[in-house]
Image (cartoon, rainbow, N blue to C red; front, side, top):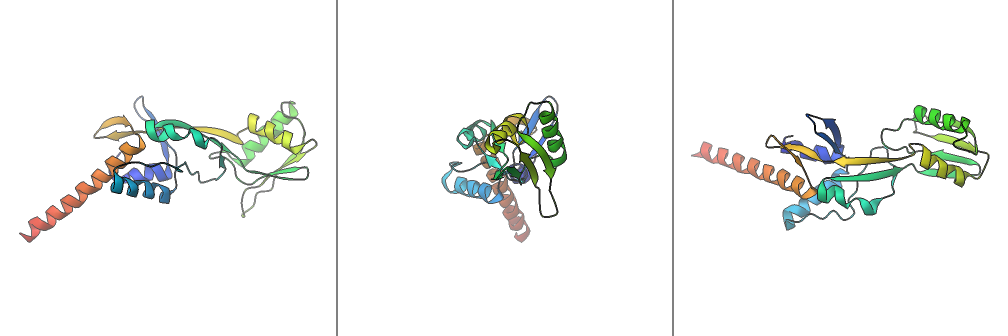
Length: 204
């Protein structure tokens, strides 16, 4: 992986598998990563206070206190939970965890309800439109109790594991956040030096 595209790894995220090595880079906010790199340039230290993966589908990270290993070791886990709004006997989901899709989710809920593995559900509706996602769960029992079952037995709560491998000088390495910043900054310094040397040679 060329250092020049490193920001894309942290911002867009990526996953894949090569020869015996799999990598998963979780997506982050561009401004947050820019601030981390800027702070590293100024202090030669990495401050990941408040840094967390930022998934394009939203949702709530429920294990923010457990994210440090992602940045200090290159490996770790983040758990996403769909945000729910309870209105009378209805539960509305307008954000789903990353890579969870509406129709398969609804079919799974219906299947679990028909088997009696989730109780208290009358019906499930897909009310999504061009304005956004909306899954409506109509409850016959306490919606809070139904919600707990949905989180525990469906992908409305889902974990994602980071595994930050990258090719550095043709060698696979598991990268910490500091490794990431160091490689990216050093690459850019070399680019600036090469550009200056080119201009100097041309002027001479």
